[in-house]
Image 1: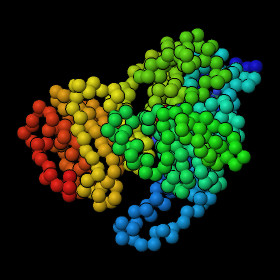
Image 2: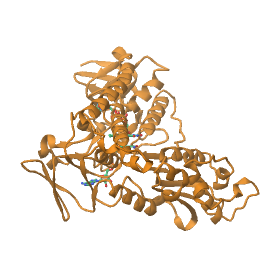
Image 3: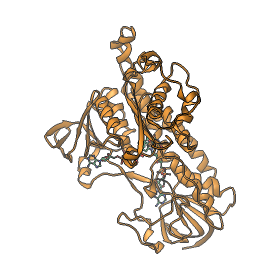
Image 4: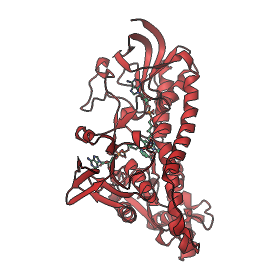
Length: 471
Ligand SMILES: Cc1cc2nc3c(=O)[nH]c(=O)nc-3n(C[C@H](O)[C@H](O)[C@H](O)COP(=O)(O)OP(=O)(O)OC[C@H]3O[C@@H](n4cnc5c(N)ncnc54)[C@H](O)[C@@H]3O)c2cc1C
Ligand SMILES: NC(=O)c1ccc[n+]([C@@H]2O[C@H](COP(=O)([O-])OP(=O)(O)OC[C@H]3O[C@@H](n4cnc5c(N)ncnc54)[C@H](O)[C@@H]3O)[C@@H](O)[C@H]2O)c1
């Protein structure tokens, strides 16, 4: 065994780990990046990117269902070539992964493959080698949760780690779990022609906490695939597939996609050697503005810390960890306004404070229903609802939840406004072009302004025409 001295050791070559490497490598050559398992990052390899490639293909095929109403004939003759869809998903995936691999290859000997095991706050073991470092950054990511008994289903049980390798899709599929992954995948599979049964242990879908948005979302998804909520599922092998029992539901499918959440990769990592108490889930205490674990020279970033499992947050945390690992004293970084988007149709988004976090007695809620929104109607995208939350005294924007057309774009506008501490009136004083889906956003802002005691003598007071076309 050897003890090699480094300034920083980064464990995990995912999005968080690579963001940390980018910062650390600006200041020192004495660092190593250790990665166990496949390179290329969860996001590019089995996460964000292949799932979006699948969703885009599914949406393109689904568009035929609106053709007749537009006056386009013959769309019923369109066919889908599933093996070609899956090949395209993998080709794009390989392209995205290729870009990531290039950056790890460039590290040469500083990039090391193997399972990292901590021996304390300054030591890491990989195989027979021991490495010593002033600082350590942990960024080992997360893995799909698969309950032990489900393993008996063999290759009839899929997770997003295995799904994208399929050459073709089964006729009948169950998606267990209705979080972000469950909703995105269930809708995409249904739009690709698979008979989908989706199961949620409770009524919450994609994390939506606003009851008005939740009801609209459920109604919209119910039109596309079977949703069963409120019961634990029992899975068992049959001669032809998998039997699923949940409450009064008893069905058979060919394959099951488990999407019941992800767990941090802590196995055999040696967190117990850090000398700090771990919580019931084996997690050490850490500060999300510095990413530092207690007062140790150890930082924790990305999905591994089970805080917010999103790509942009993983990248931010890797950046903060990298900066602080090279600093004399850790700096506190202001975290960004919470923003999450689920790429379903209608899209689902939450910005700033969620409904569940509000004191609803002390805030204003503005609403728009997209069922009769002008531009949405012209595009046959008139489904969904947006609710914006603002302070009762000065209509300062606090947050929003929505399931709506163009949710991903309106979510960014709202995130910008909330980050800049703007009020509903501030946003209403800005231009809204006509006819755009954002006029729906303006309707919800006007709803807040109407309920607010604040009245400003500027264009924020300009009223609506009260007609569908200009809504
Ligand atoms: C299907 C799916 C879709 C998603 N879609 C989106 C989306 O649309 N938008 C979005 O923002 N987010 C999305 N996410 C979430 C996003 O992908 C993750 O938040 C992000 O990839 C986490 O990056 P990370 O660096 O923490 O982990 P990873 O990229 O998983 O990197 C961790 C690395 O550490 C390695 N490792 C583990 N243990 C050890 C060890 N002991 N020693 C050495 N190395 C180790 C792992 O093998 C891995 O290479 C999606 C996730 C999934 C699964
Ligand atoms: N568009 C995006 O940003 C995007 C897309 C996909 C994934 N992700 C990220 O990946 C992470 C993992 O996604 P996920 O959807 O697997 O996790 P999740 O935690 O978001 O959702 C899991 C869902 O499964 C349910 N569940 C748990 N146990 C169950 C059981 N036994 N039976 C039925 N339902 C059960 C939970 O109630 C929850 O609704 C998320 O944290 C998310 O941030 C993001």
